[in-house]
Image (cartoon, rainbow, N blue to C red; front, side, top):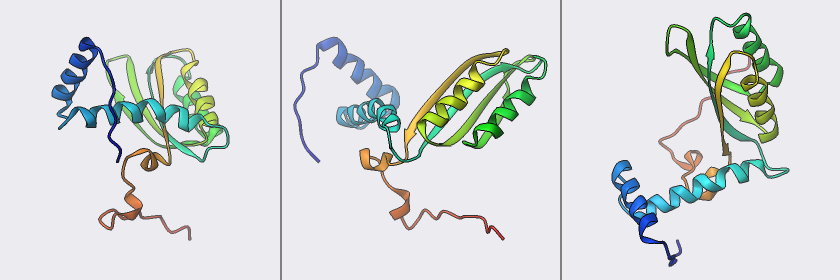
Length: 155
């Protein structure tokens, strides 16, 4: 790990300190590392030729919009990047869905655009996470003996 010196104006430093307090960071360094990781992740996921990445697409839609639920399901099957999803009724008329995605950044963006541009979808946000996130500064579960991935038997 390297130690660096940066210059930040007083107002921005106060904002960082508030962030540290609100989120419970043990130090300014931890907060700044997370801020930098979050800033780098979308660019890393978008690099041409980059490996697959993960994503989370969240969107709110009106479940009473004619045929929308079927169209959203069809988009998920057509793009093939959806791994899992969660559906929550937030009001009498609105549903929140969160889809966990895996694939290329371009394929996930195409899927997100096909969902968020549907009539009846009022909000949508795609969050991209590079598959190699551990290389940016996180930890790799694959090397942690306490974390075991299970793969269903194909037969």
